[in-house]
Image 1 (cartoon, one colour):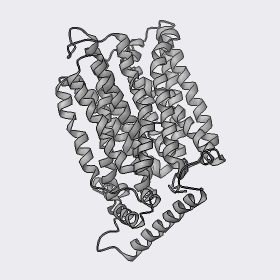
Image 2 (tube, rainbow, N blue to C red):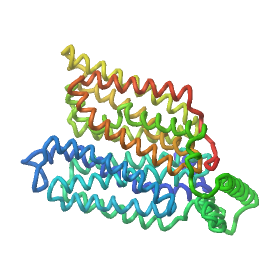
Image 3 (cartoon, rainbow, N blue to C red):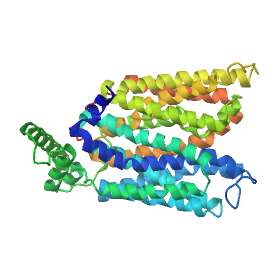
Image 4 (cartoon, rainbow, N blue to C red):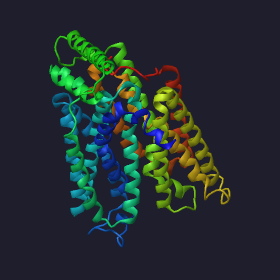
Length: 469
């Protein structure tokens, strides 16, 4: 029975090349996850004058900026990689992602002051902002409609796996060993990227139709000597539909440049509005801040578990949530997962806020529950968020945006995501201090409820939608 899993779904023979290309492309998200996970266990060491692995220690204020400055790089990466993708195509952008990520590990290794670490975190933001723009679009364009959701979910799965690896290695491996081991991964990623072609949609835009035909044959495995007549007809039908749709979009415009009219029409405005709501759900339902301030949260509710143990548990739960999303997204659709995720995140945050209220405000004796209930509630929030608002958001964003404005509009939405992330990282600890953890968690629950209402009422199901509509 277990072996049958590898003969079905994304593992079917005709989809395996798409699967391998997606795994190759998302190696950079695994690398990025390691860089993200590196920070949380490393901060206490950097803050201590006695245990710092560097020639200097940092202050609490510097630590907060070290956490938040990644969002500045994220905004820059969103727009710079959008320009690269529109001007030079998907493949050049994929190669370029390796450059700032490689710089991260050199900066970490040779750091002489806090400014080196700031620049490294900005480079991490450049990589993250760029890959959020490039990879969902690239994978969405090469994937067959029936498996697009699952392949796009590899983006989140590999990043969460990287975060877990980052948690573990920065907790148990010497500071200067980690960069030496990690720096080879982006080089391997760039080498793997040489093995697959530009997506056919981009080649049609460049009027390179023969190359586009070869590209689509590569991704549909119709380039061998034993292609059946049925497979050939299916390939030709897909190519003709793709070509006609893209050429029509180009013909409808006065030229090949994007005009403001492409953005200010009913369909585009609704898609952009939905994209912004999804970005708000992704950040302000709380999970992004929860991951970054996990130790502070558990300290506030007086849990008995070790902070590093908590982070590793939550890292494993993230992976489980993403795997669940991959299994469900193409079977039951995107909308139902977003509904369940927004509802579950809201209920979980409200319950955690209630627990925090009893601990902080009423000083109730919760010792009978403190060893397991806080981490179980947080694990539920993180799991249910990764089933929907974390994993599915990028899939839906790529599918709802019109093809003509997809790259620029995705960059705009992800620029907003980076801004929201920066705002969340800077305000969450202030809200904990001035309003209390309970009120802060309840604020996240309210945002979840608002996003739930929008998803139920306004979001259309995008499962099976053509990428070049």
